[in-house]
Length: 67
Image (cartoon, rainbow, N blue to C red; front, top):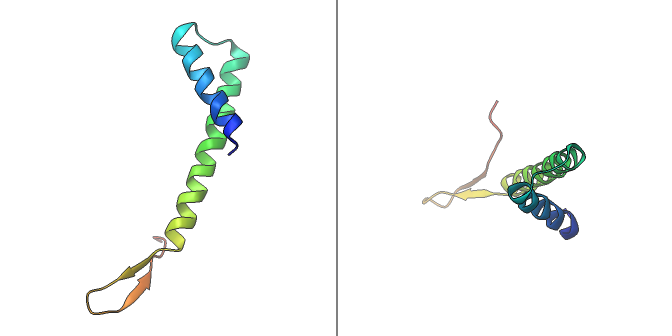
């Protein structure tokens, strides 16, 4: 996610605490948050897909998704 979008999320959060948001700003905030969370989840999934566990006996295995 671009830094400008993260800055906008933070600006909307500050405004919500101080003055409140208009319905249009609330919709924008919701959309930006959903985009941020989707990117975070994709990044975490990619990191876990490339994780290798090393056992004390020297063997290793990749993490697999639960069924």
